Length: 244
Image (cartoon, rainbow, N blue to C red; front, side, top):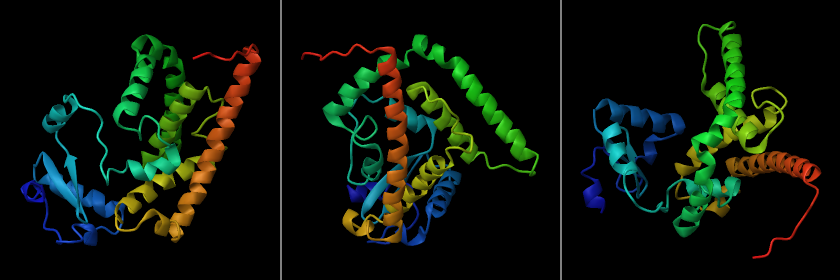
C-alpha cells in the first residue's frame, strides 16, 4: 500500500517523519496544500509520520468519491478521534451501522419542505452578517471574513436546531465562540503530532487548554439544551413513558 501511495503526487518526505518536520502549525499544512494545488494535480498525499492522508482538490475526483455507495469509513488518523471529546459519538463521529441508522433518522429533517420554514431565520442571520462586514470595513481597508462567517454559521445552526434566542454574532457569547474557534486550531495542531498518545497530550500546555475549552463548550450547550427542554415542558406539560 505504501509503495502504491508513493505514486500519488506529493513532495519529498522523511522515511519516518513524513512531512511532519516541515509543519510547525496549521498554516504550514495549508501552505503545503496550496503548493500541491498549483502543480495542477487532482489528488495529492500528505504523510503525517507513517500515516498517509489523501487530499482531493478537484471536482472530477470529488465526483468519483461522492458517487460511491459505501459505508462511512473510519481510519486510525481520520481526525474524528480528536473530535470525540467535544462532540461525542454522534452522526459526525460514528461509523458503520450506527452512522447509517443516525443518517436515515435525520435525512427527512433536511427536506426542502421543512427547510423553507427557516428561511426567515437565515435571512435575519445573513443581514446581521452583512452589518458586521460593513462595520469592520469602516475601520479597515481589508477584512478577514473567516471569523465572521464562522459565527454566522454557528448562529444559524443554534437558532434553527435549538431555537436559540440570542445571537452568536454578538458579544454576549464571546467566550463560547472563541472556544470553538480556538478548538479548530488545537485539532489541527494535534493531528500534526500523531506520535503523542492521548494521556500524554493532556499533560501538555495545549492538552490542559483543550480540557478547559471542552468544559466551556459543554457548559454552554448544556445550558441551551436545558433551557429548550424546560420551554418544551411548559408548552407540553403532559408526560408519558414510551413503551418499546
